[in-house]
Length: 113
Image 1 (cartoon, one colour):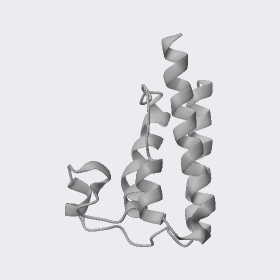
Image 2 (tube, rainbow, N blue to C red):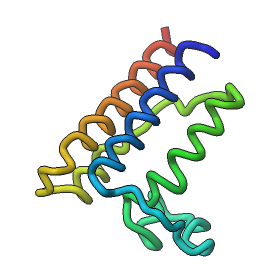
Image 3 (cartoon, rainbow, N blue to C red):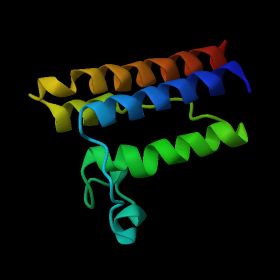
Image 4 (tube, one colour):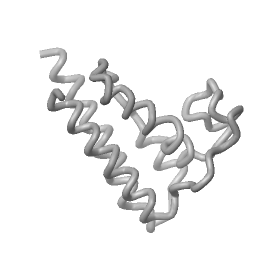
């Protein structure tokens, strides 16, 4: 597995772990219709943490498993800050999301060099 893919997998597992610790990990999947939203972050159908759990993480793990092209950039932090603003118990989740954004900005710079 290329270094990038393994790094992304580690970050996704870290995000899942922090979401579980912070009680953001749901035991029940949202209705199927929610998963079909076409709005960014599916914010019209579900909370951001559900989007992370049921859309973002599985999609990214699929990309990693298939060794497909990773997105050139991600910008999750603005939405995460908006959704988790004023919730200090979620600071570790925000740190991991910031780390994911930084990792993808590095990938983007590497691909231009």
